[in-house]
Image 1 (cartoon, helix red, strand yellow):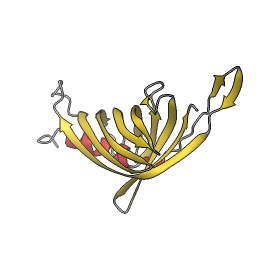
Image 2: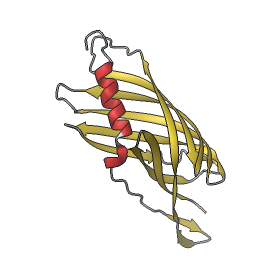
Image 3: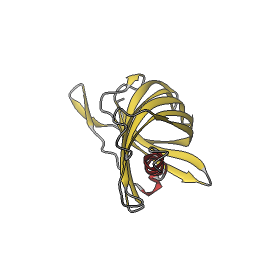
Length: 172
């Protein structure tokens, strides 16, 4: 472990990122005002698969092997067709199976036929092997035809394949 200081944090971060199947997400709908009439934004579900590549990056504080930094490179398929680029920070602990990560990624592409981009914010923890993951659209980060996008994404790994379930609202 001392020869590979980021190995432990990479394992924790990868586990948090990829074991999202145990997380429970929710979406809050928001009211929008149009001509003084309140309308509920309609919650929509998108799903598909994705490929991800995590690349370890150099940390400024090389003395603390419990901290890690990685770049994220994803390709989404299905209802969301596109790519994302992002950064992840992770922390491991002395307790096996415990740690956490935070990440930000910009997704660019088409979501059920609407083109644009938006930002996803990740917050993941593992408590002695039990994962909890929240992935949320950063408010007001949607651009193009995805302006006004809000929602949460859950990820699942089954048989070595990654998939997403994205519940979202988009202002009409």
